Length: 194
Picture 1: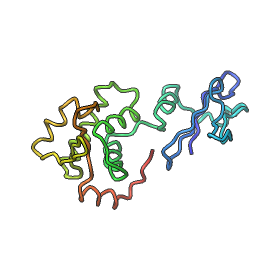
Picture 2: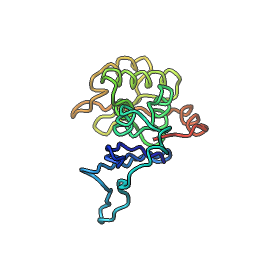
Picture 3: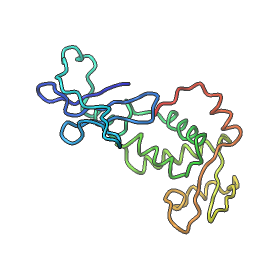
Picture 4: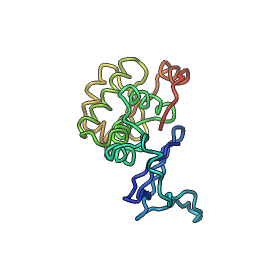
C-alpha cells in the first residue's frame, strides 16, 4: 500500500489517498467531507491521519500537487504507459465479457487529465492492435442473439458511434478473448495493477 497526503501549513493531512498494488480499490479520505470509511453495518475501518507528518522525515518522498491530484482522481500512483493499458484491456476480458465502451471507460479512469478524444483514441488503438494480433474478437448482441463480427467488418464496427455508447435498440458490441488471447493471459507473469 502507498499512502499520499495533502497537508495544511501545520503538516496535518487535509486529504489522504491509499493506493493498493494488488487490490482493485482505493481509499480516499477528506478531513472536511469524508474523514473515515464506514461499511453498511456502521463499522469504521479506515480514517484520515490526525497527527501532523514529520515533514523532514518525508522530504525526499514528496510529490507535486499535480501528482497528488492525479492519484486522487485516478487511483494510480503514476500514469501508466500504453502497453500497460493495452494489457489491462486484454486481461479484463479474461474476467468477463467486455463491452467496447469499457475500454474507453478504463482509459477515462487511467488518464483522467487527458482530452476525451485522446482517451477514446487510446481505447480504439488498444482494441485494434489486440484484434490484429488475434488476441480478441468482436461480437455483437441484440435481443439475446450473439454473433461474431467478421474480420473485414472490424473497422466499420469500431467507427460506429453505437459501438462506444450503449443505447436501447442498438446492437451491443463487445470483445472476447480468442484461444490465443486466453493462453497469453493465463501464461502471463506480469503483475497486474489496479
